[in-house]
Image (cartoon, rainbow, N blue to C red; front, side, top):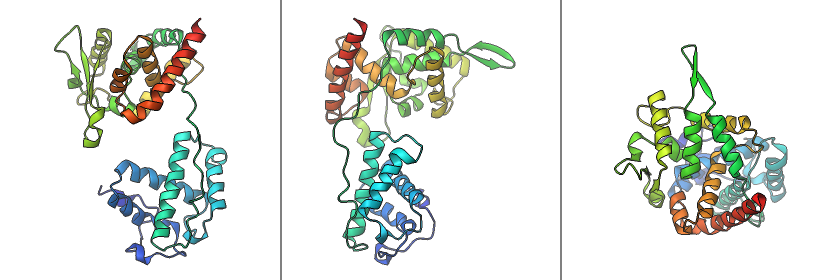
Length: 317
């Protein structure tokens, strides 16, 4: 966590929260707010996300806005800008987190008597579940695989078949693993003790993510694709030797080339994997374990999976 202090908008910061008052600039509160989050046991990811949200608030108003000048109306205008005026998509999940950031931040200021009233207390979270995900149909999957097999790369001026697009598409579709889990795979992640029943072993470094560690059955065909890919790309430590953003571009290119209207993403393939497993008769709890979800988060996910399966059936009849 040594780098967290590099996240504030400006490096010059008051020494403690006692040095703050309602005339203090937003930028001068960030480092102390980070310290508060760490003291509360928040993860590095949460600290970075909350800091990024406050940077957006500074972008919308000014980094030199005094914290005592914020009121509920100003914060609602900021949230309206995030959704409709910034020009960048704001998902329901991101919107909800940003409301949470505002509530936690201004509550902290109020409890420490920096400001007399909490302007974020009256902010409303969006009610109702998020809309259903878009998934691939069986026809979409077939077209995507066929196109992925035609994709090429240029090596020393010569074109050759690129094995990475099909490998990536099939791997995520069959296993439902997340993007960060994909990036952390190593050759040792493939358990080959039983050639007829190979496994993908997902490990996590943090103790709090222990429930996400799991073994997922691999289609032997997927293992063949992985081997072809590694023979072509010669990865050293991790199986994936490019950036996560590059993987996103590859999936997008597969979708475009296969004439699929929706943009193919890790999330889309993860949902498609869950629906396919449910349609194939896999027990719900086994699907939950395969996806690395906690029982709490699985409740809503399973309800959506069943609904997507119903829609899939109705569209294929």
